[in-house]
Every structure is written in structure tokens, then in C-alpha cells.
Image (cartoon, rainbow, N blue to C red; front, side):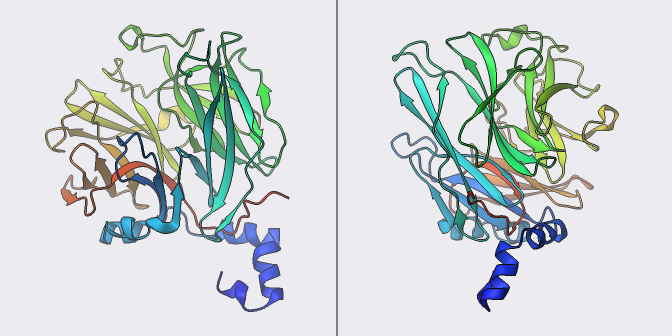
Length: 367
């Protein structure tokens, strides 16, 4: 970005030449940065502003206070939420109640270039049975379609009017949101709202062979619990089973997380341990490997609903950083020797979520 200020020709090469931008992205080191979504108090319902903080992993490991010092990077106001990150672009958006209809829009931002796109057109979702009824659940995801060289936002929601699940896809720069028919209907996704993007697919935990969003977790069977994988290029679902080592339905809903270039499954075991599974090669079911099992007692954590959540994993796979939300501290866990270092939260902020992030020159602006 400093070189882009040298001359008009340099700026044109660095910012405007799509071939150079892609070459720079392909040669950029991966898994060296992280995007944090933090809040001063997520339970302050009168103030739902959050901060979006890009940071290098090394800086966070050396000094967690840098997470706060950098928070002026971007402020999400009025309940805006981060949907995901891909190729250096951050996607965020929001919902607004308009009678029984929910209006939704998205926007892209590149923290490295400080460029931001215009808001997308507003899309309508039928998520309420009446004006006074609470809105239904919607699952979101953001990722890159390599085949068509475009970025897409995926929305999966229960259409209250038609009484069925629907999947909608918005291609950035389009003026409309397309409804996708598949499988023959969209899967029933669990409560982890944001899809995890890896291997060209968005992934959510889901229940198959169901046609209603009303389910009791205690009645869920192991063969129903799957990973719904949405191919961003083909725009179809396929189901991936859980690791064979998961022999019973966890007491509480598990969660998926993409750390680096791999997908991980985190789940509670008998309210005593946190189990972590790694899919070494995306899509290869035999590559599921149990990475670790940690007791809540050792983590100084009381367990559900305060299950510890991962922030990032170092590229060499040795150090896993874990956030413990109820006592505002972090744990640096060494997977090789099982050692742990407790790190107090220097500014007592709440970590909402973390996303893989690669600084890039990719433009978020619409043509």
C-alpha cells in the first residue's frame, strides 16, 4: 500500500491490475493473521456495537492487549454482524424488521486497503407468521466461488409462508438474491448461525431426514446428525458424517470451526471434557482425527453453556489459543506436550468470534 503511493503507474499496477492482485494473494503467507469480533459487553442490549479487529497471530500471542489497541480499525454499529471472511474481504450485514418481513443487506470491507463496497440491494425474507411473532432462525455464510470467480453470501432460513426451509444465494454485484432448489429441500441446520468456509464449501451442522425446524435435542439420533456442506460453485448440498469416533449424540449441540485450512469439530463429552476432531483432508471422511480431549476442570471452565471456544491454531499445529468466556481469560494450549498457559484478559473485553484472515489487495467495491 505504501508502494501504491509512489506514482500513478505503480498505483495502477498494484490496485487496478487484477492479475497482479491475484498473484499477490496466491503468494501471500496464509494463517498468519486473524480477524477478531469483540465487544465491551455483549449483554448490554441497549448498546450492541462491536469491534472488528484484524491482527497478526504473532502480535496476539506476544501481547493480547494489542487486540484492544487496534480496535479502532472498524466499528460495527446498530447490531451489524460479521458473516465471514475470504481472501482478505470481510462480509458483514444486518436484518431489519418490516412488519412480518425481515429485510437483509450485506457489505464488503477490505481492512488492508480500507476500501468498502456499497451496501447490497435489500432482500426480503419471510421469517414471521405475524407482526408480533418473533423472527425465525436464519443461517448465513460467506465464501469464494473459484469456478465463477465471484463471492457469494448464502442464507438458509425457514419460510414461514411456505412452511419449508429455503436456501438463497446472493452473488456480490448482483441486484437480486436467487432461490436455490436442492435435495429436494434445504437441510435443517443447527444453532451455529455462521457457516464455516473451507474447500470451496460452506459447512454447518445439520439434521437430515427432517422437514420441520421444531426439534428436541434429546430426541436427535446419531444418524440424523451430519455436516451439511454447500458447494459454492455447484450450489448443491452434500452430507458429511461425523467422525466414527463419535459414538453417541453429545449432550449439547456441537460446533464446527475452520482454523487455518482445516475443519474442526468441537463437542461436549458427558459435561466433563471438550473433544476436538480434525478433518485432515477436507471431504475425506477417513481423515477425521481426534486432536485432543481436555477436561473442563483443567481448563478452569464450568462447561455448558460456557464451553471454551477456539480462537486460532498456529500454522505448525502446536499452539491452540482458547477463549474462556465466563471468566474472561485465554488459554495457550500446547498440543504436543499438553502444557497450558493461562493469560488474563488485559482489558476485559468479550471475544465474540474469530475468522481466518489474509491481508490482500482484493477490491470489495462493485463494478
